[in-house]
Image (spheres, rainbow, N blue to C red):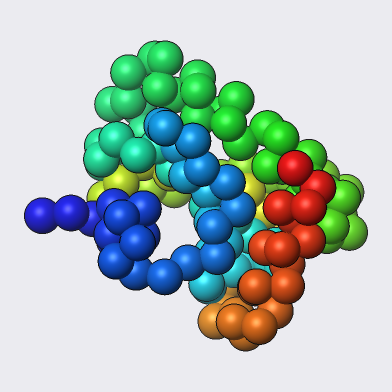
Length: 129
């Protein structure tokens, strides 16, 4: 059965897409830990990130890098944190989260985002790519 993320990639579930290529997909998290929280996923439906083939894992970070740089230009922060939790959805993914301190990576802070705000952020981030 396809994962939630595979359904997003297929367009069955709407999202605010940031970037996509033949192997990877990035979109805004609708329950962000901080403003600008982005999910980056391989299109390959593998549950555990460390089960990804090495080239796919390497490519995931390479794909995420310009997205993180664009995000830094749009959301004021000290840096973009990267998190791998891997329990929420059985599809390997990384979280790009703007942060000014380590406490900004606390998933207990996640809250539903306003869709208009997510769309606006996504548009601004895409302009920086």
